[in-house]
Each structure stands twice: as C-alpha cells, then as structure tokens.
Amino acid sequence: MNPVSELIKNLADQYGRSRENLLPILQGVVEQEKYLSEYSMVEIARELDLPASEVFGTATFYSFLEHKKMGKYIIRVCKTITCSMKGKNQILLAIEDMLKITVGETTPDGTFSLLQTNCLGWCHKAPAMLVNNDVYTELTPEKVREILSLYINQKQKGE
Image (tube, rainbow, N blue to C red):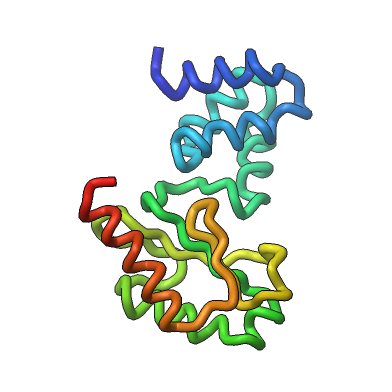
C-alpha cells in the first residue's frame, strides 16, 4: 500500500469516516506530508466517500492547508492592517532580499517558502510572522535577518 494511502486510512480509522472528520484528516496529512497533493485529496475523498471537489474545496479554503509542496521552513508573514501599519512591508522586503524569493515562492534548495497569511492573533505585538509553528513578534528587518540566520545555520549543521 502507498504510504500516503496508509496514512489516510490510519487517520480515517482514528477520526472516523464522516464528513465532520474531513478537516482533522486534512490537517493530519499536512502534518506528516507537509502539503496536500492531488493524490492525497483524491484518496481522502475515496476513503470518506465524499466528492473530490468537496475535499479540494475544503483544502483550498484554509490558508494553513498547503496544496503544493513547501520548503522545510514555511514563513508566514501576517498581512493584517495592524502589521502593515507597523512595518510588514519592510519585513517582507528583508526576507525576500535575504532568501532571494518572493511571496508564494520556495528557495531552490527547498529550505524556505514565503507566504502571507491573515491574522496570526499577535496584533498587540505587530508585525508578526510564523516559521512553521514558531511565532516571532515585534519584528524589524534586523531581527528577521537574525531569525533566518538561525534557521540557515541549523540547516547547515544538518538539524
């Protein structure tokens, strides 16, 4: 059995095969595979006996359910008005300059992907970003360069 098919079957066994269990199963696949491939969405539809269009529609509705291959570190910069007013654009420029990618792209080595997302819930400490599940707040271009340098150094050490 294909490893993705086996993962989906195990998640369906764990959560159940009814419509209300679609989101936890989608999240479980993203947690393990880092994104939802077309194949995984079709397999989820088959396993839950749902139309593939319903699975795809749900998967593409939520911004944290990636449906294309992402880098090892997914950088999500908050794009709310609060973060914008507090310097979000300078943060994005610093990231783009350092990694040589723009929003929606992944570095050629597959290490970083850069995305914008809606509110992260840290408006009181804007601007904010996530790197995978780690929150960074009160960002400046200098602070962003320091943070990304830590991730680059981790990769170079093979962590």
